[in-house]
Every structure is written in C-alpha cells, then in structure tokens.
Image (cartoon, rainbow, N blue to C red; front, side, top):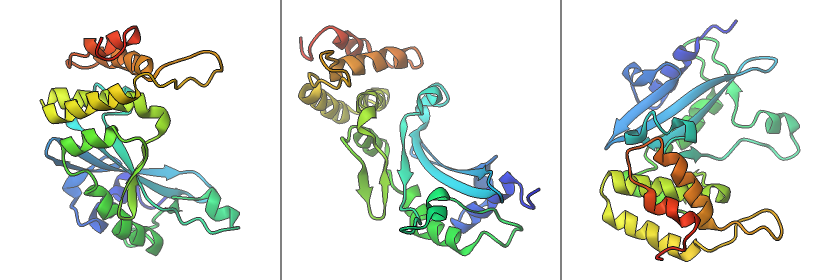
Length: 232
C-alpha cells in the first residue's frame, strides 16, 4: 500500500509547479484561463513497485464534457523521455517515476522534469485562436523543449475541431484558414487500402457528422463534403 494517495501526489505536483491545492481536482492539477482548461493528470502505474506518470492536456472548455468521448477539443503536450540507449528498464519505464513514499519525496528526476518541461507545457497554448491553429497543423508543433503531439492520422478529425473552435467563438480568421487548408487537402487520398480511395474531405465529413451530434455548432456544410468537393 502506498503512503501517499493519488490526490496527495497531485497536490505535491501542484506545489512543485508553483500552484496551490485549490488547483487540484481528484488526480489532476487544473488551471483555467481564457476559456481553456489546462490539466496535469497524475496516474499510478502498477509495476513491482508503483510508479507515477503525468500528462498535460489543454482544451477548449466550451466543449466539455460533450466532446470527451472524442478526446476533447484540445492537444496533449509531450516532453523528452529519460530512455538511456541500451537500457531496457529505462525503455520499459519511460515517462514513469517512483511513487512518492511521503509528502517530501517526489524524487529528483520528477522534480527536474516538472520544472524543465511541466511549466513550459502549461503555457504552451497562448489562447483559443492558437489552439485552433495548432489543431490544423500537419504534424507535431515544437515550442522550446516540449511539443503538441499531432498525429497525421488524426488530421481530418482535428480540422473539424478547429472549425468547432472557430465557429463557437466566432473567429472568422481562423475559419478562413481552416477552409484554405481544406481546399488544399480535401481531395487527397488517405486510404490505407489499395484501389479503394478514401478522400480527406470524406473522412472529415464522417467526423463532422459525429461531432454535430454532440455540439450545438452547425456543421452541415462539412457533412455534405462526403459527396461533394469543397466549394461545389
């Protein structure tokens, strides 16, 4: 049995980030600013001895909790790991740290990583417009030593989320950029199956249909792209 409960570990992480226990909600450290929710989620991982992991996610609060089923409307912020070449144990335990035994034992590696990577991660997204533009990115976006993890396989769904932010917050400039990207890549074949084309706009339309059921943002024009080219 661990000496420090999950909520206690979250309080310790909050303190190391210069925050107070008021920012702790269950197993997460939560900040709210400019309509965005920044969360540092603490997890306990079972090994021979329990280990601690932490992740940072930044999302638009307008779509909570409706879009949680689809990963939220936001980005996860990643950091370098501590894997040592040729060390299988460090590979197996990447992004993991010893679970604290008491209130004064977070461990030097965890404290160093929270200071070097945790604090910049909390400030990674500047505002909602920035979040919308990040969701439009083709690949990971690096800022300093941390980065927003943006898989190419998620690109169509992320673009719909950018439209959600733009329309909900009435950011016409962000929506124009989203349409410009869609015109550029809409006819791209993203199928994994030979001789079975599946276009970017068709995937986007499928995601738009699903998201439309969860939000009050109109997406009918995106849903129509299942059968029509952009601009027709």
